[in-house]
Amino acid sequence: MSISPAITEVMFLVGAQDKLVGISDFCKFPPETEKITKVGGMHNINFEVLLSLHPDVVLIGSMVSQKDVDAIEQMGIPVVCIVEESSLEGMSEMMEVIGRITQCEEKGNAEAAQWREKIAERKTHAPAPENRKCVYYVVGFGDGGDFTAPKNTHIQEIIELAGARNAGDSLTGWNISREYLFKVDPDIILVRREDSAAFVSRHPYTQLNAVKGGSVYGIESGWIDVVSLRNMNAVDYIAEICGNR
Image 1 (cartoon, rainbow, N blue to C red):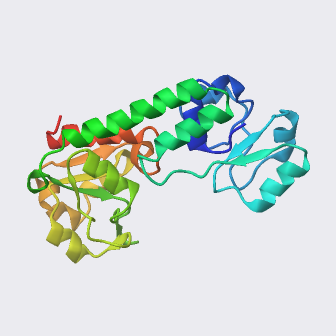
Image 2: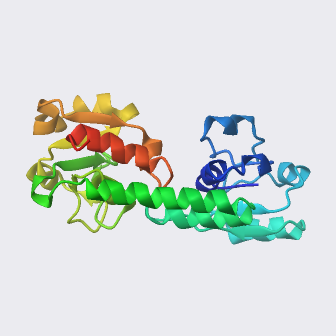
């Protein structure tokens, strides 16, 4: 059983999906997860359903509380915590660990090696720093303030692997000023698909050159907002937009 979306995705990748008797409500990828019994969220686990599924072990991420871990273990069910990775490069280690735990070690090691090769290949094809386009990812906008990914985040890693420069690469926090945004004046703006129409029609963002020039692109939030296997989709999508593929 998995109570972590990232763990669930990797279990499918290494061929261990048949071992999943239950997953969390947030485990929605790949689409085949729809057929697996849900046991609630990471903060509101349905222990009755969990127990009825008789799992041999429950795999969790760092979001599950110690109280819930204790409750599961008191049912006589072992719990293994696999801390979610904070970088794309770290995903390979997660593949290897989950491969060992699920007795799919050969497949886990093979997928990990292939993942490392993908990252190395994209680094090789990245343009020189002075030729990289500046990309701004809209984490938040509007009356509540403007937010983007600062340095040392997986989102910056995604943008750099795509051969671009993160507009927030000099920031240490997620909140930015409008002054900073207009000073950076990014070449390309990425915004969640569901928010793109609202962003491009809202003042003062309409005054940004990227908006005026039609260089605002919607992106699937599941590709970029959290560290997952789908981050590579974001890398390739951004690289294509930037003309690096």
